[in-house]
Image 1 (cartoon, helix red, strand yellow):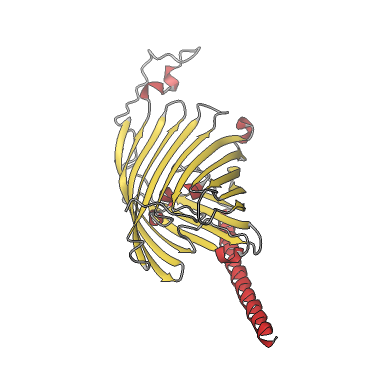
Image 2 (tube, one colour):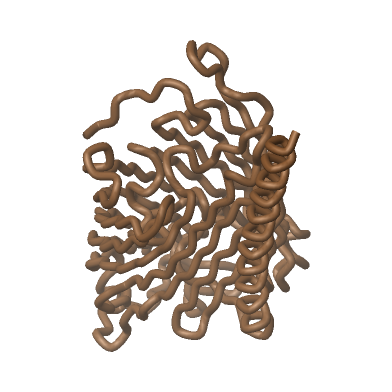
Length: 377
């Protein structure tokens, strides 16, 4: 009897300790988002580099130190279609592939590598941006289940436009555009290339091959956090269709935060997240949360029953859009969809219709557990 009481006391003490840690982590996450929100609420939001509303599904576009962090390898496809209600739609495509080295041989540190490509085409003149980059990262364990990561990204970009689609005021003949009228405008670089380098550092706790797993009986074991900062466009490059050497790109600073807090004795998890970018006075800030429900567990031995989970969430991008999103995970595969409801001054023209976005992800090993397949390396 005495031993049973002692065991009960120890279990209760352990539960209280776990609860205390969860509350502390949650407060840190909320305070971090609140501080960023206070600083940025008065900031003006302007268009800058291409971006996705599902920023959690574009890890290499945010931060090179994310390469190889989750699983043995990960593949993600992205597509965004926006402003279709206003003009010729702006279309953005994304692809990324990551893998990890030395993870099985040394648990204390490992390397990650990634390849990413993004393509954006905007408006009636087909103004386009193409970026192709290679990322490398080093992850070192600083405590149990906690890693500090640093990454470098290198590649090139291309900017282009359809010069024949341009229209100028001096080509107006009184009734409309007349292409036979000379515009007297000279574009020396309708297509030009530039180097692209970026640096990033991040911290993670509980992030790994099973970082999406939420168990049904002990959700407190699955609290996770990933936070990082990155600097893009190092060095600055000539950024002009007119060949103006004085017109250069500016550094772009990025901050990102993702957290997950399992609710004990349930299949639910709350996952607050945020994204911040600053570039030459233009800012972008997105904050919100998703709610994840573990539909079914993976069969432990046969793997015939795939684990499944569904998430729904809402985020707000200051001065621009309210974002609703959903994610369905089925074993190693996941599909996400979101829609931007425009809230900016342009909403008078767009009628609030912003853009649709979809993403596909493959992650190995299976984040729900079961038999893992062989990795590339």
